[in-house]
Image (cartoon, rainbow, N blue to C red; front, side, top):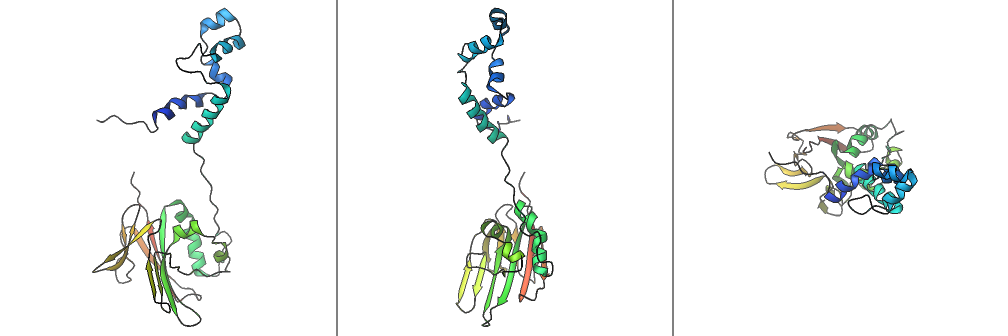
Amino acid sequence: MAEKKNEYPASVEADRRLLEFETWEDYLDSLIEIADLRNLRSIPSARTIAAFGYRANGDTLQEKEFYKRRKVIHGIVYPTVKPYVLVSEGADEGDAFSRELAVRERANRVGILQSIIFIRHFTRGGFEISGYIDYAHRLIVENWAPFFKGNKMLLPRDSDLGYYHWRHGTVRSNISRNYKPVMDPDRGLLFQNRHDHKIICPDPQQDPGQNTSKQRIYSPKYTHIEIYDHVVRRKS
């Protein structure tokens, strides 16, 4: 059996010991020998000997360096998890689309679920705009509060997974944080998840794919909405 490698580099592993000590004085106390206490008869004097480096195999850390390196190693071993805010709290419950996306927000933010939203909409001039949106990606790059408050519609952009604007004749497909568009000669447009590499098929006549479900959403604001929910199976 192969030997398990350390989780951290050697320099980090060496500094992990500093986490055992709350203060520089505690660190110096760990360097004091019993003979020092017998001969010097006081802890402060013994600490002075340790601070000068007489009781360490390597360089003894001075006070400023001790706290600096301890702070760095603490940040590496116990990283701070940045909190996220659920902007859908207090969402417009009267709109089915807003309600369904609010239900999915947390799962998409933490990466358990990576939903693809298909929207087909006609402008006031009668021109069709449609496309596929990586919900988890858009949650990160824009402010969703206006949408969940009912002040703004959600429409595809030419930077989304898929985009079609009939009037402009614009057709786009883009790689997002979580998906890569794939053109299959038989099945048409597909999306490959970039984390577990599963294929999502948006063709309504076909199965959406492994670990994926689809749901049609009805909203008076939009012509057609479908949500493809993919449960991500990350490698252990």
